[in-house]
Image (cartoon, rainbow, N blue to C red):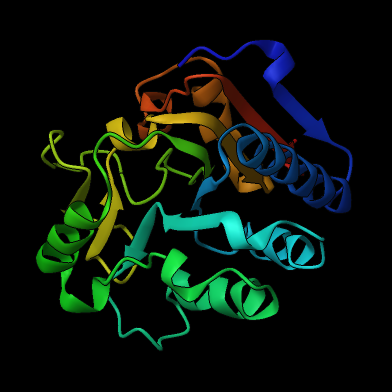
Length: 225
């Protein structure tokens, strides 16, 4: 999606990157809870958002009205250190009072097909997420939608089997489902992302450019140049 230059936010340090991301998440959460009483938040996995979740956990938010989802998950046992859900549990959920029944992990331990089917049934297909947080891979992937990934666009959650890094099997929300969001924030850090970021800026055919937002689309950048 073509993004206005004002929506590309370049940070001078990793600390500024983490603080700005946290502030934006808080603002979107406060607005959603103020206007409709709850906040639906799709988390990104991987290493980039971990510090943001740790910082977020120190804030005084209306946690009782937060509802958590995941953009993707790796097909590993639930207690595996490489699971996105375990990273989020350690860095975020264990430190705040979000009700457990409002944290919707992807059951990827069931395998890619069954895990996707279960999550597909769990998510209300008409729900517009308040905020989706995403990363950008070196190859332009986002969530677990990689270049040349094949999947059923009519589904919300789909099995993925071509991840370039282990584990190859994953479960991911589709670009269409991720785009059913009022607000989207991409988190982009590291010099190894420069090529992908250039393609993203130029709206080239990479998975990340398939994502849109209904209201605000932000790209937060640190340490890429």
